[in-house]
Amino acid sequence: MHRMLAAVVAIAVFVGIFSFGLSRRPYYETQALIYVQPMKTKVITDTTEGIYDPSRYETYLQQQLQTVIRADILADALSKPATRAWRFRGEPEQAAIARLQHSLKVERVEQSYELSINLSGSDPVAIADVVNAVSNAYIRGERADELAQSDQQLQILQDELQRVSTDLNNDRKEQAQLSVSLGVADTTGDTGNPYDVQLVELRSELAKATAAHDVALAQYESIENGKSDATQNLRAAADEIMATDPALASVKQTIGQRRSLLTSQMAGLTPKNPLYQQDQQELQRLDLSLSTLENELSVKAAHQLQQKLQLEERRTADIESRLSQQLAAKTSIATGATPELQHAADLAADITRLQARFNEVDNAINSIELEKDTTGLIHIIVPAVPPVAPKTSTRRLILGAALPLALILAIAAAVLASKIDPKIYIGKDIANQLGFYPMATLPDNAEVDRVAKDEFILRLLAGIDQIHRIDGAKTFVFTAASSDASVTDLVSSLSRKMQRLGYRISSIPASELIENHELSSGFFTADQMAAAEAPEVTHENFVVQKIEAIKKEADFIFIDALPLLSSSESEFAARLSDVVILVAESGETTRSQLRSSFALVTRLHVPGAAAVISQLSLRHADDEFISAIQSLEQRRSRA
Image 1 (cartoon, rainbow, N blue to C red):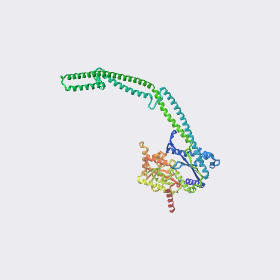
Image 2: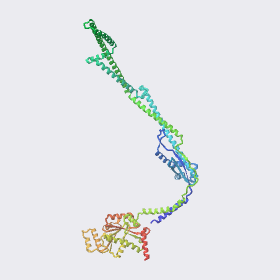
Image 3: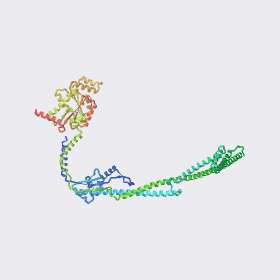
Image 4: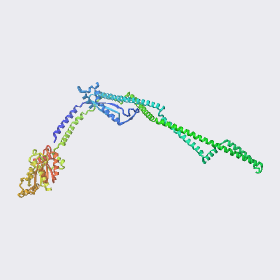
């Protein structure tokens, strides 16, 4: 179907590829290797070595691949005298840059930190000079970017350092003023603000004084309230004092020795003995003296103890009172100085933060100033050199592939043209659209003689007869799928053929059937016509009666209908038929028209539907149809 298109495509592709192969000359290729230092993740003020970030490095490397072929880099390279051989005579700069961008191949060397810059051409010296010029221009640009970035960062850091230094000086001046106002050298210190330290100490001393006063008061009240318990407590306390009095102990020891001597003398005497009585009287005097001495000492000890406890109670009360007054005064002073102390604490924290920030920024400035003197992140490892031998030529491969590639593209063009063609040509197209093959395929009347035409009409006749024998179908509506096609000739030829074979055929145009005209076959009686004119008989019933009457007199009823998609009469006739035969004209009917017509037949609930392809040209026919035509011609030749 598309031989001309395939031939044109094949010739054009073959000539183009063959000419391209003949024009191929020996070419050379050279490359330069550039090392790209791995990136480290760190902030501006971070002076440590940093952490290697693979994802960041991959992104950076992809950016470098695009930077090498940037227009300004290539313009700088082509401005060098060594690259004049690359530019054609009179070629504009932009054209030379675009051509170089297309020719340069920049890739990453696998499993390394290197970039390769490759260039091919017919002049080995020229391509080596161009690659080296591009490499140097790229490194100069990157170095300039690094320095510009460093200068920008250095300026930002210096401004930040100046700001931090100013804030630090202001805070320190304000802190000095607060120290003078509060009367302390250090408003914070290591142990907190001085007022809190003093208040804690005063509270501790006051607690001790209060406890001592409570003890002294309790002791004094235990002997002073005049009750019997107090007297007993006082006597008990006096006895404790007397027990430790050395004078009383010495007297008791002397009296004890005398009593022992008198007792020993009285042991050998009778009570009536004057010496015994004298010793007994002396013992009584000794007991009385000891008792009198103990009483005097007890009274004296009680009085001394009472004075001592009273003095202790007054002393502790005075200490407690003075400490309470000092605490109240210090608390008042601390409360009044609280805002200043809080502000002093805030200033101290801000000074600590600013000092740390000052150190970070200062270290970062020193690091950047040192890095500016280094060799940079990128440098050339291996410069490009002129290649000594050309690369393997692809000329033979291109010439050998010209013919196969031309044939493949020609076939592809023909197949594509067939795929995008919206028209119906052969029976397989019908099957692809409707799901079943056509009942018959009829050749173009202009390309075959009457005998061949009758051969294919006979095949259509056989199909109709088979439908009649199997399903009993008698009413067939022939309608075209395309709006500008006609089936009248086909219906006439088919009717004549079947009548010659002995079938009784009634061929009716759909318009005459619907419009209630007199049928050409003349099979209606006067009674039938009268019944049709009765008021209670509808038009549809009348048409049905006419069809039923014709069925009694004819074997088949062929209804010649206009295209189904554009005629309501054809739709009405199809609803009353047994089978609708869609006639698709080869090379004229489109796939959408065929599908729409079949969809309409389906909605009308016609008992049967079939398809026929007419006017199939031999140049559009498939191998099966052509083989049938050739077989028919061979039979006629043998006959």
